[in-house]
Length: 201
Ligand code: PCA
Image 1 (cartoon, helix red, strand yellow):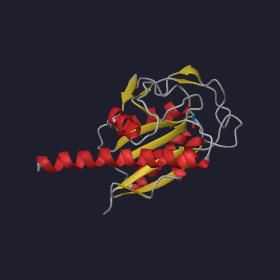
Image 2 (spheres, protein in one colour):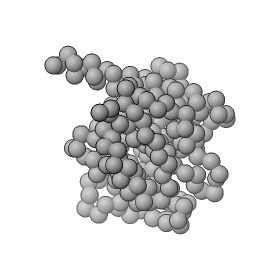
Image 3 (cartoon, protein in one colour):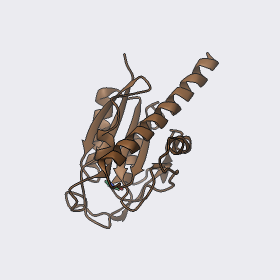
Image 4 (spheres, helix red, strand yellow):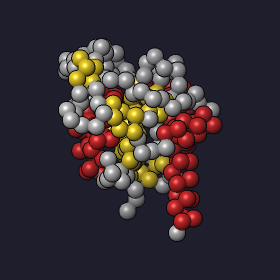
């Protein structure tokens, strides 16, 4: 059976009518490095966004989850290295939840690092011609909540999880270009890994 990659984006939030992650994900190809991409849009809600992503990943038996969110203040595509066990909202989520500095999982790990080679991915996105750098903080809002819960859920399972923040750009064409660069870079990482596996065999 063909391998599956679950790709997620977010609905608009904070009173906006648009989310850059949805524009990027819409322009991503249906196939990446021979795996088929399944795309879903998540609600900007603490807890529930992650619940829906986990259910979708289990249903499709995805081997990789690549979650996208918008980082309005950033200029570059930023793969995230880490998710922290901390939730703080400067603005309410889409159902009015507004955590003020609490743990996502009481007694849970302080943080999780992605098992995906996020730094290598950022380098390859740059080589594709898009601005990109590794980020060491996904913030404390719903994107970090999703990332923390996904990394916790799939830790040690072989299902890898990666979160990528994307900036706002000025045109549809720019989102398509971001999507192309990210998909090409993802594909290169996966092919490099497959080459290493083949040498080992
Ligand atoms: N960005 C927000 C939540 C949803 C999104 O696209 C964040 O960075 O947490």
